[in-house]
Image (cartoon, rainbow, N blue to C red):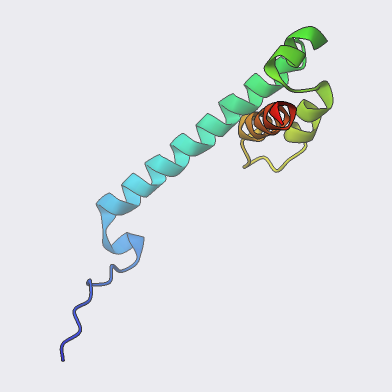
Length: 90
């Protein structure tokens, strides 16, 4: 009986192109999260009736921004709005 397995890749330094690609992906994710945090902060300036139309409350924005700096607050806000929308339909 033969077991066929994929060859294991070494450390990222063993494959410079993979290390570069991984670094670019990580940098892109960090920049995207920073931009989304800035957009979430800008949402605090919206009037309450606009936030209600979106399906979130001002406290939801504060809670999302209190999260870890690596977390995307807009993702959390989207989940909150979807949960409220689904709860309202039932």
